[in-house]
Length: 243
View 1 (cartoon, rainbow, N blue to C red):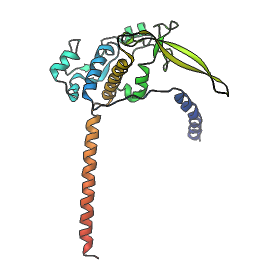
View 2 (cartoon, one colour):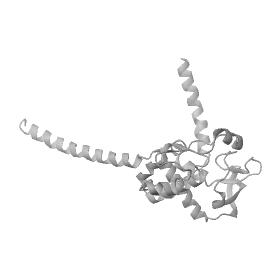
View 3 (spheres, helix red, strand yellow):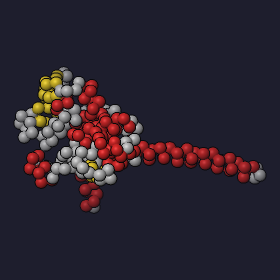
View 4 (tube, rainbow, N blue to C red):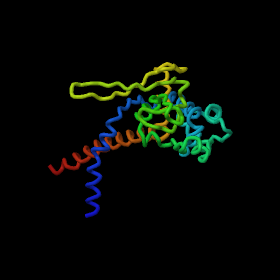
């Protein structure tokens, strides 16, 4: 009886959760994990901008051979801390120091794309804006009071939040928009491409063998369909004498 009451309670909360999630409009991330050139660019961006604070402790450097990087290229472009090619991608930041600086230790990013989703990451990395009320001086449109500062602001520039009141005849509502106030080193299209490559890599990071799994799955399905055809022909041959 108690279990039934708990289930009914959580079911009653479902509309609230759905409404909260639907309240946030996410941009579609143009992800293609079969694009090795994009994954290679994303890997370099991840190492240069993310690995200082965040780790990817489920991933080894030599796994990047899957995206057509040699051990020499991995050592030259991805390893900057003297680690070996077979080592895990660990952050150099200590947890205690991170908590003192940011108030919370930055999470491991090994499976962040699987927990948050590619669209969320793509929108998040493009939704930072200046906010002097926060300790870091930055905020995020889809993650209010985020502890992480905008580490990519030199590339994107600085955005400000504009809140507009919109009337639809039935009432008024607030619309939040971001406006670029200080240009960065990249144009909007270039920065979107940069973020696409980075998110594409984080999707790959969450399941490096996904492309192989899909390819193997197609081979298995083709084999089973072929066997189905042969089985049908064999069945007709057996039943020919019966009829």
